[in-house]
Amino acid sequence: MTAPPTPVTVGVDTHLDVHVAAVVDQTGRLLATQAFPASTRGYVALVTWAERYGPVQRVGVEGTGTYGAGLTRFVRAYGLQVVEVDRPDRATRRRQGKSDPIDAQAAARATLAGVAATTPKTREGQVEMIRVLRVARRGAMKARVAAAEQLYGVLYSAPEELRAPLLGLKTKALVGACAAMRPGPLTSTTAATKAALRTLARRWQQLQAELTQLDAQLRALVGAAAPTLVALPGVGVDTAGQLLVTAGDNPQRLRGEAAFAHLSGAAPIPASSGRTDRHRLNRGGDRHANNALWRIALVRMRCHPPTRAYVERRTKQGLSKLDIMRCLKRYIAREVYQHLTSPPPTAP
Image 1 (cartoon, one colour):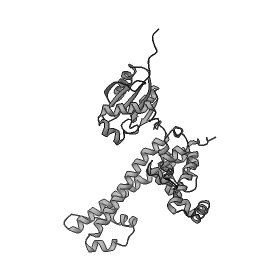
Image 2: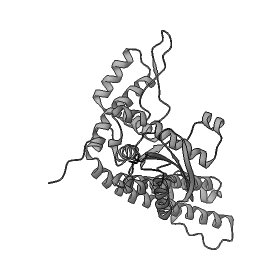
Image 3: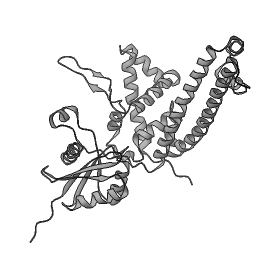
Image 4: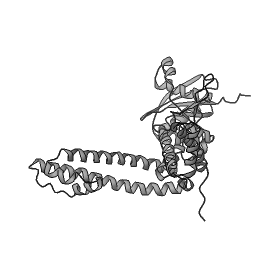
């Protein structure tokens, strides 16, 4: 009788054009490494090549949200278990060196040892739709701010007869006045300045129209994906969208509310030594999610009576505002997790 084939573990170091894979056995011994193109044909070749050495137990992919997103979707559809692998730390790279095969081997061994055990986001549902729209909105917002700054910069150095009537206007009124300018032939500094102001103002208006359209689309998607989350006090469409993106389309991949708190950088970190027993702020995690929790806490501290009472009580106990904000973000993360993992009610 022949012995059953030994399971193997695969690690993949992903790049834009090529992925490098490594196969290790159950003892961590390297069996083979090979590079494959980052395409559907390359994904098929990678899985077929890995199965030559035995049944694939798990596949550890580095960069599941960027260069490895296509490979992650293919491997999951193929029926294999995929885990997300972080980059090797600096100490390991100083000791072993840096190359694509070395990184693939490190990914495979981290997956085999259980160091890398995070289930990647599926990126196939409404939350992925929210994420890509938020990317477009963030870019439009930055471009609109830049256009307004350039508009004011050109106005401040404009000729006096052009600058004086516009200085007291607010941004929207200034944009409307500049967009209606008629520079005419560019034969003077005033005409060139009018042309520049009109171009910047119309750019601002175009970006504002994009933002209005994106906000309407995001409002509908976020309301459909998490209606109970948006209904929480202090939670708006923007903060709810960010928390949804942080959790992903499959929030069940998180082990619990403590894991979500760590993911959003809201879990307190022990900083005790000797007779000192204290915690400090968490500087890790998703900083965009941490900022969303901070904004929710700030709004509640201003207009939410239970939160105002809590702040007053903790202030009398001697806690600083920074420590109170840390506690509030931890409580909010626990509350948000319950609404992220509970499915929305189905319509009759």
